[in-house]
Structure formats: C-alpha cells, structure tokens
Image (cartoon, helix red, strand yellow):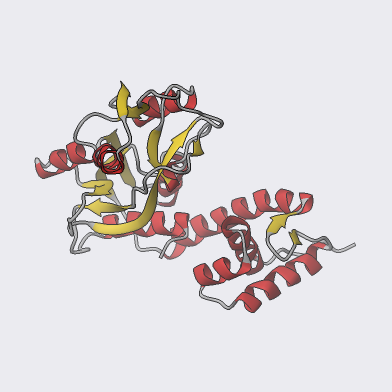
Length: 283
C-alpha cells in the first residue's frame, strides 16, 4: 500500500482548530471561513482514514487518533517553518542582548528562543530574565538591546506583541479561610500585576493580606501551587498546578510588548518579533 504524504496546509488547519477549540476561531486566526477550515479537516480525515475530531453541537474535541496526530503535526509544522526561515529569510547575524520579563509566556519562552536560535544560527543571543521595569531601566542604560515585557497602564511606547487577560489563580480546589483576609502571593512592589490586583480588591471591599513575596514569578506561583495563597497571572503565563479562581474582581488585560527599536529599523529585532508572533499564532 502506498503511504500518502501529509499536506502541511491541511495540518496547519487541523492544529488551528485543536488549539482554538473550534472551526470559527481557527478560521479567524487563519483568515479563512469556517467552511474552508472544515473542508481542510475533512480532507485530512479522508487522507488518514480516521476522524481526528469528535463533534457535538457544543464542542469540538480531539479523538484518540487526533491527539496522536496533533503531536506529529506540531513537530512537522515547526520543522517546516524553521527550514523555510533558514532558506528564504534574509541573513541575520550579530549579537542580541535580550531582556525578558518572567511574566512573558514562561511556559513556552525557552522552546521559542531555542527555535529562534536554530533558525538564525549566526546570531549570538544573550538572555536575561527579570522584572519588566528593571529590564527596561537596563535597556535605557544601554546594557540590553531589546526587552520583552509589560506595557504599563497609559503607556504607548513599545511594539505590541500580544494582549492577554490577567486572571486570579490558585491551587485547584483552593478555599480561603472564613473570616480571614484573602491570602496573596505577589511579586514585590513596582509590579503592575500586583498594583492592579490590590487596587481591585480594595475597590471591591475585599480584605486581603500579602503573605508571600518573591522577586521570581516561579516563587510566587509555587506559593499558589502549594495552596498557600492566591496570585495573578496572564493567561499565556499559566503554570502547572494552578487553576483560575472565579468570583473575584476583574483585572483587565495586559499588553506584552517589545521595547527598543520602535521604528523597526533592525532586521534582528524584526526577525525576533516575527518569530514570536508566528510561534504564538498572533497577528
């Protein structure tokens, strides 16, 4: 039996549906109609001879075969994109001193940077992780070339990469003790997420106390994971062992930006920003 070749275009549509939970959302991300995405998935199912999604009137979920295919599809698309980038992108070389706020997609940043380094092997990448405002101060002193971090409320500087919701999180099943202030785990003063969370609780008349402070996002998250306190994270920054906590004041959104070379004059900076947006499937 002849083994068919998988079509990358069909795989891209399949991955978009799987990651966004539906055909309409996938179509918006890909710039296609819902029916066009549905047709791609149908052609893929015909090609592999198995259904990859279980469809109901309310949800689209992966079948067991779909879960298996999804892992392969992501690897194939990543390898394709890396190869194309190496072949057709203009050469990018030199040294890039990059500051990254630890709120900036902590789960997937390291693999993204590894992929970026593979795609641009002639670029020497040096990365420093810290707090947004401290890294931006380092950039202003000339010690960093570029910073990935949060834009503070009311600011317009920086090149927007993506916008994300800020949400309350805690260990699954967390329950605050009755008649006690809400225990919080927070980054030190100066953190925008901390300031916004405390202000929202104060406006709502909810008693709270900061019981755990750490300069590291992983430290703050560890207190939440252990069930010791609540904290706040961006949706792109969800870490294992925490779940969203409902019925608390809304915290709005945060704009994650690139600071440095706002005029887009550097091919190095443009290459990194483009790579991040492609990896995250944001426009």
